[in-house]
Image (tube, rainbow, N blue to C red):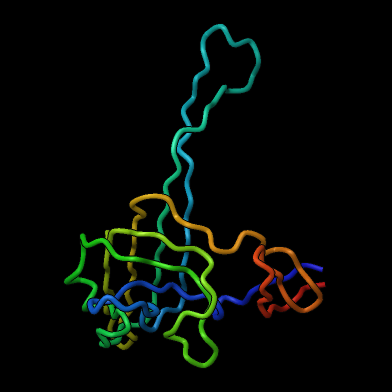
Length: 168
């Protein structure tokens, strides 16, 4: 069986204007991107059909989108527009039970620059936003074995158990 964590159980948290960690307000989706820069080193002397490549540097970014709300303590998109270009602490983790704005178990963490905030307002629809954070340095991994399934739970590298659902 394969363990899955539902999307609503993962949240993007970041330091707010008061320096406290809280979830991005009213997020409907969050995404983590990790990219490896690769350089092709093939020469005219290579006789096979495959390119020769080497790994260079890793980079990462996180993004979130959702409906526009105004709540500066919860990192709403309007207050984030004032903070574009600033470095913030961001964490990807589970929500703390019913307190969706508080961190439960941290999965990944790092410092990032608020690099893009977009708000879209379409007639007769909820206004939506997208925020992009670009990593400054390495992202720290707090959980290393999230995919190790154990009946109805996921056991992490440090022995903790995270509730999960399974697919057969």
